[in-house]
Structure formats: structure tokens, C-alpha cells
Length: 482
Image (cartoon, rainbow, N blue to C red):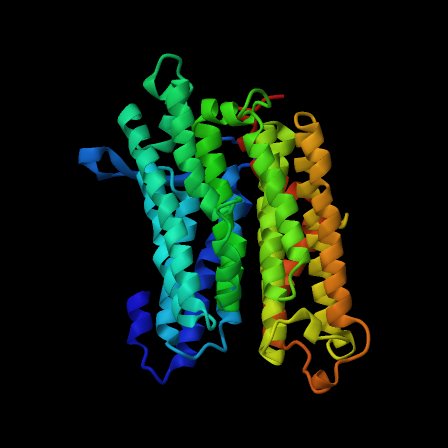
């Protein structure tokens, strides 16, 4: 496909966009097929492909999906064509941009499907370079700084991940993730040794923590979001952050249960570590969002806060907490994608994102205001919309184990309501700023990017079991603590 894209002549940029859009519909159709035909009563992997790749090191091309990955594959595939539509106004080097985007989508889908640890790592790294160039070449005024910062942070985490992965391979003599999970539970096996699992847990954890991001590895995120093009911010918040939390579930939670227990058992010096980090993410991210005057940076910091609910749900290690965490991963991907698309809409017209520089836009852009209000209400956790269910289940699961931290974490919900409602008031209500007397309403292409996400936000708020049923069985076989 990349060769076809580059074969298109420079003056046929519109054709390149149309071809790429059609190409991104293919994985979406496949993902919908997998979602519909997925056996919800089976806790194992389905639609598997397993063949030898590098025999000398026992590395396989092993891919498949289970309840943990099928919803994220669907979300990634859905955001593909949406992001191509959101990139329609980009003109500089459009063929290279689209080629890098397709490579990025390949890496993300491959990461969620990989069942071999080496392949898992290859796909994880495959997302790094496309994202670096997409920010560094097509980003804002400080794009080089943001891209380099993103690259260095991620590379640092990747090195520790690689060391941990090699250590696990040397203990288990395989990269096959399902096999490693079984070996890690086998009494007396070298991979099941508690001290080893604790150190391996730390290596993987830091690698994934950079991606989530977890405080204090978060400082690259606001810069990357502010400088990235709208479509790349959508992918960054909607999918790349979920790669971190998915990795925590797939590797740290399932494959290193002794390490997970050490940091999440609620006892001793380190037993509350993950829950405390989740709490810090929630409160710190929310307070930083409240202090922002840049619309896009506010949404970026809100993402840090919302990912804290995923962490505190994982730390609970019970069915409610883990169900809430996984559901929150999907729901946040949908809602944050909407929010960044909405920021892009107003930026294209006003050419700035200063919240205090707007005012009264609701009278000129009623459709845009309505969609933004829906996204804000979903993000602040209004019951009946998708943002409520995941956060509620995560907190319910965490309360049985971390009562004080859970109660304190609810402050993030209150602060979230404060910054979203305050932003709504400053941007859309009150007297119209005379500068925007001629501002135009959201157009058809922009509505097309938002409608699927808006529908998901409403449907999953009313009927969350559509998603929960997909991963209920997969959650049940994880090492839970009731």
C-alpha cells in the first residue's frame, strides 16, 4: 500500500487522501467482523495465527485476540478513517504524512494482537518513529522540541522494557506470552520466583508508565499534544496511551502476578504503590487541567487524570476494579478523541486555542456547542454517558481495598466537573466576542468524524454490557484477589 501511495503523482494529493481513507476502512471492516463473531463465552485467544519466525531464538509470528484486546483493536481501526478525514486540510508532504500514519496504525493494531513477546516489543517500537516524524514535521511552532522529548522519554522506557523482556526469555526459554503466563504460575519454575518477578515487573512497568503516562513520566504528553496536528493528538490520546495500560494488564498483571502482588497487596512499604500513583495521576492531572488557559493543553492534562482511574482500578485486582479499568480504557479513547477533534475544529477557524479569548460561540455554532457539551459531560462522568461507568466500577473495586485513597480520588471527579463547566462557560456562553461575528458552523466532514464517537459515547453509557461482555471471561482468568 505504501508503494501505491508513493506512486501517486505530487499534484494528485486529493487522490492520495481518498486512497488512504479507503485503505483504513479495510481494517475497520475486519475489526467489526472480529467483534461480531467473537465468542464471548470463551476466555482464551481466538482468530489465532502462529508460525515460526526466528527459529534460533524460538520467536514466533503469533497473533490473536481475546477479550482484553478485541475492543482496543476495534477502537484503533475506527479512529483510522476518522483521523484521515481530520487530516484532509494538511497539504505539506501529504503522501509522506499518510504513509507514516498507515505505518503507525499497523504498529498499534499489531501491538494489541501480538501474542509473542518479541513481536509485542517490535510493534511497540514500530509506533515510535512514525509518531516522532508526524509531530516533528507536521506539528506546531515547537514541534522539534516536543518530538524529541517524546522520543527520548519513550526510548528510555523501551530500553528498560527490553532488558526485562530478555530476562524473562532467559528464564522461560520462550517469547510466547500464553506459555510465559503459565510458567509464571508454575510452582518451582525460575519464572515464578518472587524476587525475579518484582524486578521484571519494575522494568516493564516503567516502559509502560511512560506511555500511559504515569506521574512523574508524564511531562512529554502536554508538549506533544499541543504541537501535534489534530489527527495525531487523537491517535495519541485515543490509542497510544492505552498501549501503556494494555501492556500493564497483558504483561505485568497476567504474566508477573507476584510482582503485581508486591506493589498492590495493600500491605507493607510498597503494597499501595500502584494505587498511590493512580491517585496522584487523578488529582495532579485534574488540578493542572483546571489551571490551563490553552484548550488543547487542558484536554491533555485531563487525560492524565482520567488514566489515573484505570491505574486505581488495576491496583484493586478484583473483578469490579479490573472491569472498570478496561472499560475506562476504551471509553476514554472515544471521549478524548472527540475532545481533540473538537479543539481542532475551533482552532481551524480562530487560529488560537486561548480559552479566555473566545466567548459566546454558542450563538454562532450551536451544533458544535451541542457536540462539545456532550463530550464534556461524558468526560466529567455524567451518569448515562460512557465516562461514568468505567470510573464508577474502578472506584467501587478500589474502595474495598484502598478506602482512604479511593475517597480522596473522587476529588478528581469534582475538579473535572469544575474545569469542563468553566471552559464551557468561557468559550460558549455569555456575550459573543466581536472577533468571531463571522465564524462558521462545523462542516459536514467535521461532523462525520464526530458522529460515530458521539453515538458510542451515548450507547456505552446506556448499555455498557456491550463492551463488558467482550472481556468478562478474559478478566475472570486473570490473577484476581476478591
